[in-house]
Image (cartoon, rainbow, N blue to C red; front, side, top):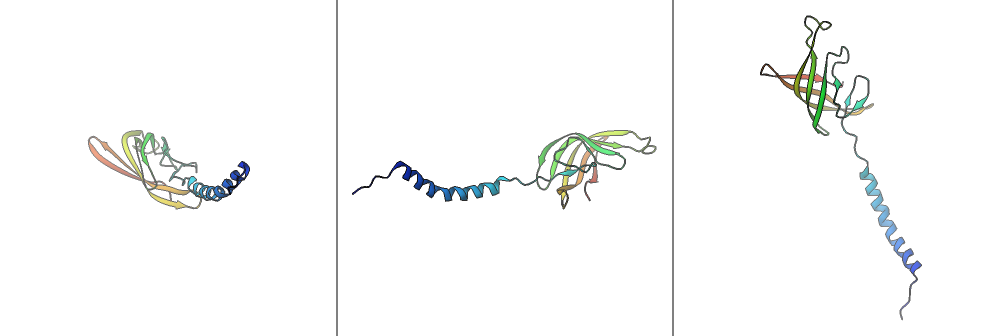
Length: 143
């Protein structure tokens, strides 16, 4: 003998069977949904940012920085950008010096973990040329 099941009973049974699967799937989805905070740089104003187009490297005297930076890579261990390195030549002294601009490539690296800001890039290495001679300049970004 065949028993007919009402539509409401069938829906209730299906819901009770599917609910635990959905709950497990929901937990898995929610644990993977939160993206990790990217590695950032700390500004002179005490703010953290990613992929800044303009950045001040020398907070004390504003003697160096980058401008018009575009980033071709930014990940958890390094970042690579192309733009302008600006530096005061400090000739005859830094007060009277002129800012010189160099087309350059910068590589950010040396990730440090801080309690206040999380992971930060701690080093910027610039590669540029002056009169056809390759130059490299290193700046510390975070203590």
